[in-house]
Image (cartoon, rainbow, N blue to C red; front, side, top):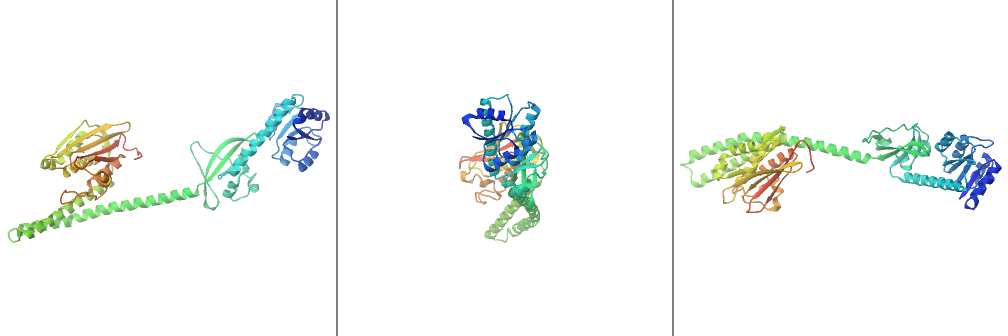
Length: 460
């Protein structure tokens, strides 16, 4: 360890030389000018500075030495035993403050090692800050810039020597907030601030992270989302208008087909009557498509009215609405204990009706059996609608919920491929999930969940 001892009292010099011994090499000067000359010629690990020099005294001596050798660790040795002065010396950058006559060789060596270690740690810390890919500023309590790294210089478009000492302002950040700073060239930085000690003084460690790319990506996503929402609204409106518009010509087709059948029953041959019946069936299927398309459109556009409803009452109304289909197919509808939950009454009724109607349509040789049950976990109700129908192959589990997706020929099983898509839309709007389990020939079970509070969005 090479020590620069700046002391004008010969007795104190002798004492320090004896204390340093062989463990350290000391160069001794008696005035501030000699210290400046020694620093110009040699490199020192640490300095011992007396505050009472002939041409410079007090803490001003420390300030002058710090300006000449800003990275040199300095330990004060003084005859003045004053805690206030010692505290100010440390605040101004001294590593420690020793009172003459109050320290021995062990304390001196310990102080020098500690001061050197602190300085080395500070330099390593500075090196880490310098290498940071984010901009780093150290700001005094007065708002002045004390330090900047290369990343900060690049972000602010100025060199460090131009920034140091400039007024940056005192960054104020509320807890939980991450403010943004507009940078030159239209860039944006995220601002993070922490209070630290810098050279024994309070300061603000300020981090600047360039988030321009992220902001631009976010704005682009928002733009696309806005366009997609507008497009979806237009598509929903188009579907509704087209569905409404198509009803009149389809009713006309069916009306004139019935007239043809009635007028031609005695004059037309069987082949012609058969062809007219096919036209009628096609027109009927088209009417059902249009009707269900309107239902699907309404399920997306109609505002939801969420309130507590008795699910058993909804099921009973659904059974009444489907009375004709149930009677014709000899279906049996059963249920377990059903809760009272927060849902939109009309939409939940439509959901139950669609699932029961689906079970009746896709029945096997046996009369349909449909059972509705419910159970709950910590956050939601889980409903199941089980049937004894023809079942669904596992590879079609996702497809059945798509619009116009039909797995079977329309001539064999009536349907439009919209019913389950509507079910999915209704469940999604309640912030729930819908899925199924099934095996061909062994029936299907459709499950759907409804959160205790459907207004809270959850990860699906």
